[in-house]
Image 1 (tube, protein in one colour):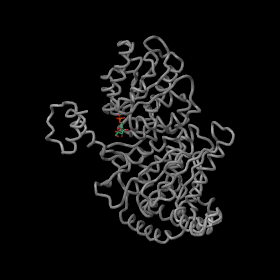
Image 2 (cartoon, helix red, strand yellow):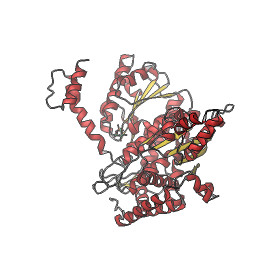
Image 3 (cartoon, protein in one colour):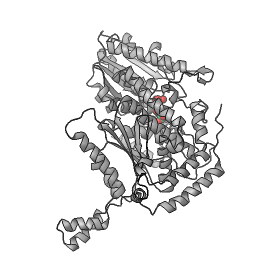
Image 4 (tube, protein in one colour):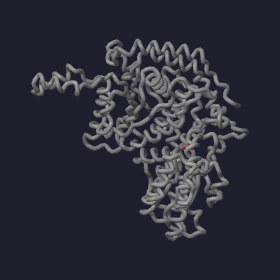
Length: 552
Ligand code: F6P
């Protein structure tokens, strides 16, 4: 059933105006002053959920801010959207699909019907299929063409068929089991697959072709190249099935590629690509950390789902992050938001969250197809701390543009050694504190005078050392980065995206914007490859560039 949206335009407009007035009132105030006004601010502006602790006391927000934002969420029909989404209603209305990646990790047993099928059965049978496959590969029962066990897995996929599995495999390094090593090939750039394969042995390498559509140019080309590499380096043609499995919703195309029917793991239309690491697309994770570890990842995400479904918005972690993001962007003028995990194994987390967020909410029309009148979609970026401090934190501290920052810090490292973790943590806390407190001209001048500069020299240099501060950040703590807390963390951001999509009243689950580039590529490729092809149909720039490529 198509989702009967409950977006109350008039009520949203009223809330929007109240928030605009509130923004004018709060803007001149400092975050530090909020602490002076409420000695319990840290307690009042922090919460636990699903193994995560969120400190949002350094947010540029007061209790009134969150009250107004919760009213906005109510007016936008967020609660109904959440209920309808988890119930399998057609939320992705432009593609006529339900949005049920949450069902992949749900512990609920009650039937969940999608187009007459109880998907709980398919989900469970696929988990069993994954389990058997992982056992078979780990035990050495699954053998290659030379009857040797598999040592290397190459996951070929792009976008949601790559970014999620990759960040999970990297983040769960402490949980890697056995001898298997997992590699990822995503880009059509031939160097990606070339450098990956040059160190591998076809006799002990197993390829997973990860593609929901089984039509993605990069993935199919890389898959063909992998098959050619296998055959050119000793692989037996009649044993291809031992070295290639596929995860796809397009069984027919996977079979046509040469994948044995029993080696195709299903995907479904009610799982969006960027939300699919919880499905069999997560096979690389299961192979690398074992099926129990993969199930623990699902469990952690499910815990966040249960919290998201039940907690009131003022004490709902995804809602708080999502609504604060709306507040910073649509009312305080933030141009982007930055994710700063102080954990080297999460260095590619921002890359995954970019797709989850920007491919979901990078839209310009609302659910009815009307142009949006406010900015939607957040520009998400970031990287691991402390490295970012030596790269882009200068802009975060002194740039004319500011970005609300989400710091992520496991309290315990899997590799404790000496003072390393205390130093990592102190850097993380210091960055958050510096963003809030800054350094005034007076402080900078006094510092310089104390350092022995003359009054003139100090007055010359001090303006360059002023840090405006008053820049909001949030701190997400977890006891340790485990499959459970990683699952909860990624689910948190998936739900943050849903919250924001609801406020902007847009469809977060289609991605029509990527089609044009693919179409244009299909028309440029033959012209680029055929030196005799006519260029008259191309714009002058593209024609000129094609000629440059032809002349290389
Ligand atoms: O970028 C477009 C997109 O469809 C993503 O949404 C998806 O994750 C990626 O391409 C790969 O798609 P597929 O899994 O069908 O190969």
